[in-house]
Image 1 (spheres, rainbow, N blue to C red):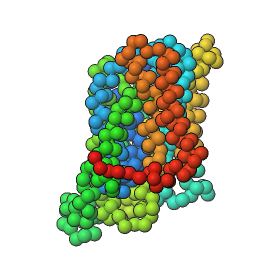
Image 2 (image 1 turned 45 degrees about the vertical axis):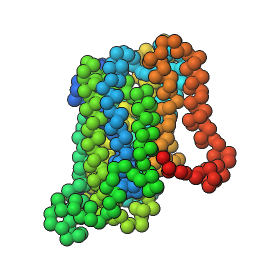
Image 3 (image 1 turned 135 degrees about the horizontal axis):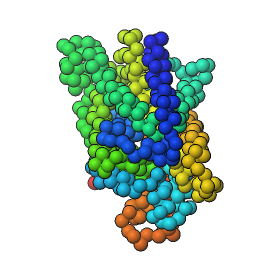
Image 4 (image 1 turned 90 degrees about the horizontal axis):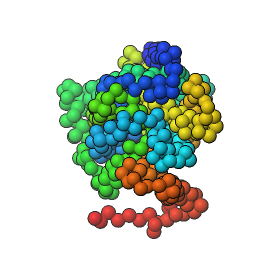
Length: 475
């Protein structure tokens, strides 16, 4: 990176922090801090949904899976396409709940404060896990661009904490209103990120193989890459995303996404009306689907140009960073810095919302019910800011512990299952009781999370035993 790239990043960071300071004075009540006064129309709801649902991990994960599996790898992100219609139905739920957190809904539905505590802890763990994936993505992108160290420390131990400080600053000062304003700006950056490399990449492909103009790059890609790389459903033996995997991933996320804590906020709880809630949630998520197409095309360009690169083969997570460095770096006009800023926008637009949702859960479902029932709005907002900072720090710790994109992604699919049945049964069966909810939660915790992790640790041979891992693809 050159001086102009760092200047671009400095301007971006200053602008985001400035928004937090600007909106800080308006945060007087919990509803202002956590829900922005429920005053947002279609535009802000759209970019809030887009920003919260599009993290830095999405382009990096997509590039990683497309690099290893061809176009079928797009399902690491595109599986949300089939979930999107559910949003038109569910957006109304969050608007009509009139709760500040989904934990409040669980407490009211099951008449149990303890279920609210369990849900708050679940929400914090889920967003620490999801945030860890987003921070890991930044580290994977920045490695090829900035080198392995920063300030004399390994990159993940220096850059990631610095980013966390910026996110905490504007998010915890300005509350959800600051998150929504920054999401509007950052959403534009994410769209720019999704298409920025394509013209430069197609031009490079055309030049490398004697083509005539940018559009000729598409023809050359089809000539240089195997035909299997252009199929959208992978073969059973070669791809990470054969049809049965796609179906399973769609179902598990369709069941789990509606109960994730941030959906009460970006899903419609902050909207002016039910129609604004529906339009914002569906439109914001459809924008992400189109952005995914840009990420796929970019990675196919990377495969055409650098598919034999030993470093990329060893760590496909870095493919987006390598493409940025090699395609934009030689221009030296600040485009590398702009790309990093756009990817930071993707991270920050998600993490700011997640940490505020977690802070609301802890304040509303743990602090006030059990620690200080008489706490006023000012005290609650102070506690919320502390909790939000701790959640981001927890994400950093998990990112440094795992530091693997696909492992993080799969974990985010599983964790929502802990409360999935409790939510859906509570929505549609009036006779569901708190006892049944606890039994269901305990069962899901044991069989979806504890046993799958603990058993291989206790007996490592189970994970590698050829007799147990043999797979049959006969359908």
